[in-house]
Length: 238
Image (cartoon, rainbow, N blue to C red; front, side):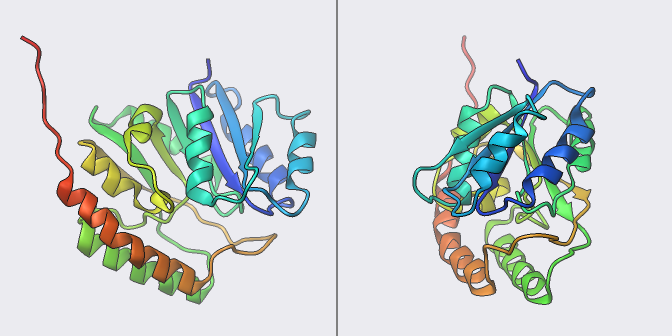
């Protein structure tokens, strides 16, 4: 059984698929038994055909296809559910996360306390447009103030977490933006790990400034309610 599953949600990223798969293989082959699960969110380009062709070079690759477009959180959720591995690493499909950082997260995990179950990438130097950086900075500041999740960058697609813990979390659209808070609500801890970030070299962003701000702010009230209502009770058997 693989020890790690790399879950990559994609929508219309056909030109980013081959180079990202090659980088995943370069980072992980010979280091750990792994599987790669691409979840295609009903792309309108030929992403699925590209993924099918890449299976010849990457026997670790599995491909899931949404029959209807359902969004990034649902793609991550379905990829984690399909995984056979106890630990999950996620990457954005646009190639801006560097797979070479996954071994760094594994090293931090191996030295962490047992209660830390989420290792979140922290893009200390962003390689995005000014508008994207501004919207992320505002969203992170508001989220941190409301949820007190002690995480500087929840929007980074590069994360490492325990599959069992993730599947305990409440599922909802856009949940991937709030994993540190949800993990805290479940009674576990998370830690942020500085990672690299790269400019997009192919394809186009699927989120605009207003999308990031208004969708994020609308969800914050619901997540804040979940945090207030959550309760973790330790149990022992006599």
